[in-house]
Image 1 (cartoon, helix red, strand yellow):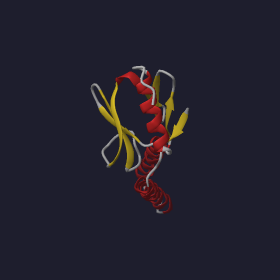
Image 2 (cartoon, rainbow, N blue to C red):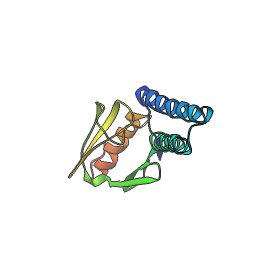
Image 3 (tube, one colour):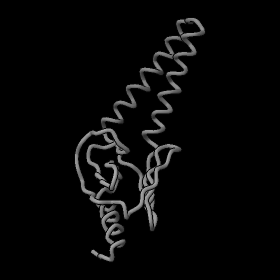
Length: 139
């Protein structure tokens, strides 16, 4: 199953602000006919902001039978269900894979990370049931 990430309004505002600022800078450089260096720097700014927008907006989670995959842009990270020690819903803005304040905290043997799928309750049930099935416990 594949679930898209939930993007909070704060991230949408930040993306809009940075994109509008870099685009306005690029337009000003072109209209004022500034030197080639400024034109290149403004264009690189627009490209960089577009690249960041791609990484923020193109996030999703794939739940397979034995593991789950977190895809952020073209980067993917694979985790096993059997490594999960604890998972619960929390609200914070810690730096992680999540782009929403309401997120799932997943604690494994060696790390803690957060995800924020659109349907948070359904994904939490999938994580709990798949983790329990490794030990023969059915909920």
